[in-house]
Structures are given as structure tokens and as C-alpha cells.
Amino acid sequence: MNTLRLIFADQLSESVSSLEGCNHADDIILMCEVREEATHVKHHQKKIAFLFSAMRHFAQSLSGQGYRVIYVRLDDPDNTGSFRGEVKRCAAKYNPAQIVLTHPGEYRVLQEVRTWSSVLGIPVEIRPDQRFLCTPEAFAHWAGRRKQLRMEYFYREMRQQYDILMADGAPVGGKWNYDADNRKPPKTGLQIPANSTFPPDEITTEVMQLVSQHFSSHFGRLEPFCFAVTRKQALTVLEQFIQQRLVCFGDYQDAMLEGEPWMFHSHLSFYLNVGLLLPLECVKAAEDAYTQGKAPLNAVEGFIRQIIGWREYVRGIYWLNMPEYASLNYFEASRDLPDFYWHGDTKMNCLRQCIQETSNNAYAHHIQRLMVLGNFALLTGIDPKQVNEWFLAVYADAFEWVELPNVSGMILFADGGYLASKPYAAGGSYIHKMSDYCKNCRYQVTRKSGPDACPFHYLYWDFLARNRDKLSTNPRLGMMYSTYHRMNDDKKAAIREESALFLLSLEHHRD
Image (cartoon, rainbow, N blue to C red; front, side, top):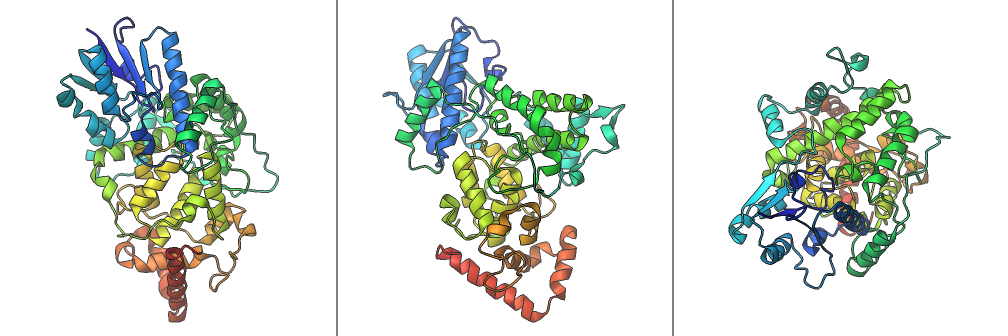
């Protein structure tokens, strides 16, 4: 009995559940580049190249181990352009007794897969994605025991379950969380290690030519291309992070500097999210660095929290609440996404820097995404669907299970506080403290009002004023509302008028 085994672009791991029990002689592994997925949103050119190259390298590795791999390239003349079409075409040719696949990472694809059994007349087995540390069922059980979901408590249970940074049942160092130690602003003279780079090989070069031919209208720069595209290369990125960047990662993980898009971050999310790396091997490497005295606890704990805490938590939120979560819009935001999110032509230097770096690298670190790009979208009331589409399209590590909860829940508070306890809104002072962006900006961060004032200042207060009915009872915002209420009427009127003028300028594509 032969089996057709489908592997998606974000499942490039030899331990993926769809390969378990594979009969090398009879079973067929299908991998395919399909236009429907590349254009579902207009993904960054570099993202498409990364995925297609990593897929081709993985397929080559499997073939070298004796697996029967059917690999459909985007420009194959018979390519139907969709998963269903390619599965149907392969099934018609090889007549498999069943189709086996690992749980997809997107609700839309899962719903499509669930129709295949009846449409194709072949049994379809959807196996759990065992690369994650918490199943959707386990997360639902955890969530069902709580009146309010908070990542911190989920994270503590994950630490205990996997015995990470634990000693005699207690957290190493006596505290669960060292986030308070991880907020240092950048200082002059920081020695930031060079980013891990890998020159394109023959496979990647061929993929880049394909992307240039078919997706040149998509966002972003295709060259230079330097991503890891094999497991061996991804392990090198992990090793270099542990040896060179982890020691300073904790202190400066929130810092932003012009010309330094990578800072001390790991850049492992690309490889974790497609399966080239596994979460526990990254966690163990960081934990070993701490036990060997090579990295401080605040850095190691902060890195581990991102993987076994936040990453697993947002995936749980996603599968627990789809499809309704995708349509949430707590603030009823409806403004269109400004055009400059696609080209970076804005006078606000912080936005310009983050957008240009996103265009160049298909990457921005989490504070750039949350406190600059996302913060602006929150304060100006941009439609969550448009913001989600942008974030999903432009980042190479973005898949809907991780992107949607981060954007709708963390960035836009579109779920009304289900994921986060307060909106992560901030004025220009935060960006000034955590970056050097303000020194080269047309606006003056020291000015609170007037035509030269940083727009983040008045937009922040206007956001609070506009949403007073929904936010004034939030205990974490009480101090800010008290400050707003103490302002005199003239100052409140100035905030309102300057914000209205700025928001009007966005509609006319000026700022």
C-alpha cells in the first residue's frame, strides 16, 4: 500500500510527522511551489526565494537518502498553481491508498485540506505538528482552566514541563522573568557582530532568477540574498548567535540603531518557522551557554522565553480562536494603510528606517515591528486586516499562526485585551530613548506641539482620548489618563487639531 506524503514549505524537518513510517520503496513525497501560496498576499521577493530555495535543498537531501520525491517547480509547464491541483495530479498518476500530511500552519490551508478526502476519494490523515512543544489541544486545556490568559503563566508551566532553567523545582536565579534587565538603550561604541551570511549556491541562484522573472512586482529587494537555506547552514547561524551575540542579546534586545538592522538578535525565527531548526535544540544551546558561564542569565532567559513562552503561546492563541480571531477590530479602526509602508518615503525617520530595512532584508526585529511600525498603525487607527496583510507579506519569518496574534493581539489590541493586558502604545519619547533615529528626523522629538513636533507625541494622546470609553478603566493605563485629565482645554484642543491635520495628510499620502 503506497502513501502520498505532502510536505509544505514550512515543514522542512526530517523529523516532521508526515515522514514517520515512510516506506522508501513505495511511498511518494510531494513538494510543490504553487503560485496560489506565493501570491495569496504579495510576499516579499526575498521571502519567496528563501522558501523555494530551502524547499529545493530539502528535497535534494531527502532524495539523497533514498526517498521518492516528486518536486514540482513553479515554472513546470503542468503546474496547476495550487496545492489541491498538484495533489490531485499526483494522485491520478500514482494512485495512492492514502494521503498523509502534517497539520498545516494556516487555518485557510487546513480548511482546504479537510475537503480533499471527499473531493479526491482518498483517505487523508492529518498528523500533529510535533515540532512544537505544546499541542493545540494541550493549550486549549490550559486556557480552559483560566479566567484570563497571560503568557507569563503559560511560560512558567512550559519551563517546568521541559525542565528548562530549573533547579530543585524553582527557577534558576530565583526569578522566572528578567525582562526588567533587558531594556537598555543603545550606547555609543557598541561592537555588533557581523550577521551570518551565505552566498547563493547554484540552487539559490536559479531560484532568484525565477523570483525575478515571476514576482518582480512584489515588495522588497531580492538582492543581496544571504539567508541560510539548509539545516547545516541554519545550525551555523545558531552556533554563531550563541558564541557571538547572546552575551549582549538581553541587555540590548529592545535597542535600535540606524544602519544596524540585525543588532544582537538571533535571526533564528526564519529557520525555526520553516523547520530547519527545532525549538528545544535552540533552547538547550542557550541554556548550556549559561551553565558554562558564557552568557548571563538575563540574556539566556529572555531568549528562551521568546521560544518556549511567546512562540508557543501565540500559536495556541491562533488555533484556539480561528477563524473569528482574524476579523476582530476592537477599536473599529478603518483607515487605509499609508502608501509609505510599501516604499518608505516618509519624513518620520524611525518609520523610514524600519521600512527600508524591511524592504532590504525581509526582516525587522521585534521592537521595530511592535513599537515603531505597529505603534504607528495602532495610534493612527489603521484597519487590522490591512496591517495583518502587510506584516504577513513583508517578513520572511511570517506565517499566519505567528503573525496574526502578534499583530491583532499584541500590536493593535484588536482583540480587546484577550492576548495582551494593555495596548502597546507609546509616544516619541520611547523611540528617542531606545534608538538614535530621532537625531536624523525632520521632526523634533523635544517638541510636543506645533508643525515641527514629533507626530508620535500628539497621536499618542489623541489615541487615548479617542478610545477613552474602551480604555479608561484599564488599570495599566490609569496613570496616563490621569495625566491627560490634568491637561488644560487648550492643550487638549491642540492635540486634537494637530492629530486631525496629520491624519488628514495620511489620506492624501503626505506626512
